[in-house]
Image 1: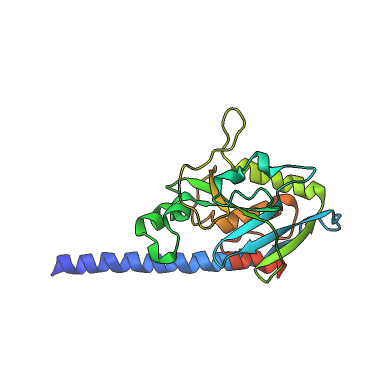
Image 2: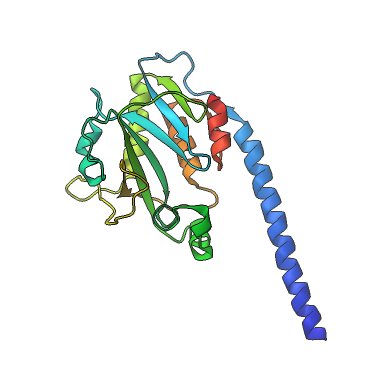
Length: 227
């Protein structure tokens, strides 16, 4: 009986500890994501990009080609099923490779995948999706920025890709695709509860000198700055 009570007490402490952790996590996230970093005030509006969400994950959408960078030289559109070389935009997001490749829907989420992602135990990937045209919606917001800000944004994104010694991006060797227009590349860094896909997007905006949250883990808190 005593052993049973000790076991029950131990389990209760674990549950209570988990509850306290989650309350603190969501509370701190709410407070820090409510703090707005304004970025570079009065910066020229030389060009625009998009910030978009699918309801869980955020992406930055950039022109495939301009005077600053030609993404077609770094991300091969021929690795997509569509192979559409007329694409004018590419959406780029960073995230846990296990989530990207093994969890096409929430119904297929495995506990092991979630645990590895939460505690930074798996590798990461860049998800790249090509678009021929885009329109602004509630879930896809146009952001105007200067070329100086754009270059800083590019620097952050490019440093998130894994590179070979010869200066090439590394394609993820997988047949997994979400649609006809996307592909995956190896990334740097580790995903965790404190560095999520949306944290990455928020950091990219902050690095570029664009409005962002002090820290944000969820897509709604990143998008809120532009809605």
